[in-house]
Length: 345
Image (tube, rainbow, N blue to C red; front, side, top):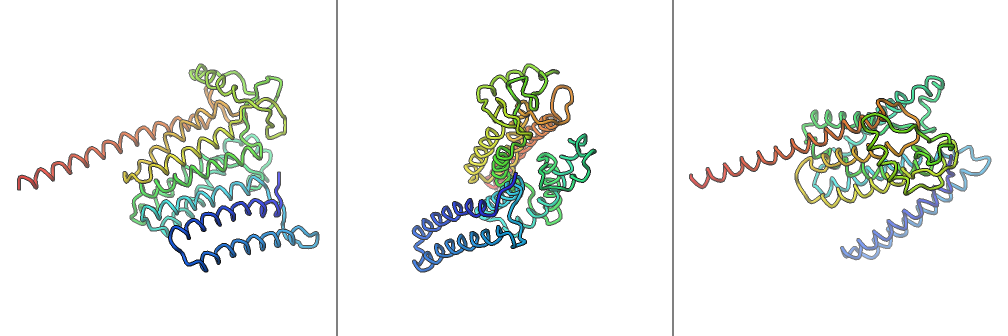
């Protein structure tokens, strides 16, 4: 599934309109000189015209300029840009060094991208073993978020350690943009029919998973029964239409709500609180979403491999929450002891 340069330019036009409205409100509230405010609006109009002109030229038969792009790649790129922008805005609001945040972001994107692809190839080796030429073909999609998170946060920890910065502050900033990027990424999965939901009709073929087994079978049945209340006529990656749970849109809405919740907590100054909550909430939600997914992957004891990893991350999130709570209590005790010492002195 591809998208043309003109389609991208048309979509960006809505972004320029939004930026123009935001700039106008900002200029009015901060009493920006009218010439400067008008110049900003004119610049957006010129940028939009240039992008459409370039798209029209690129789509000409003799231009020799690529004009069709994989929709999956475009959505992932958009998710990364928007997520990074949100992280930088949060970091600026928290008076962090934005340049350090950008340095950490580029490192995490590089290492996390490698980890995400490695995870995707590993969990789908039955396919890539027969199509080794597609392992490095990123335009066809295939990206394991859990591998990217593990590799990315390890890289972030090492970066913070080497540069002698607070890992918790970096981690708090990263999950702001990460949750928003995941929301856009899941929406992109819905557009490209990736990570499709299980089918209600057993005759649908692809997307129909076997009945749940193992100790989580009762929970799986409850979750699936609830999810069937939202079934729609949806295709899978092979364009087989059936009544499927719209897991992509449900996940996109959840991660956008998580992004808003983390933003509302941005005024709190407890280092690591947003990161800890993200690890727990996102992992638990992904564990639940796993019962609704119909795309093939490795299974073990009745659960998808990614669900076992999500359970592991849920435990880590709980452990981090207890550790942060104990740290705050210890700080409060030390502060109370110091105050009593000063009073007696």
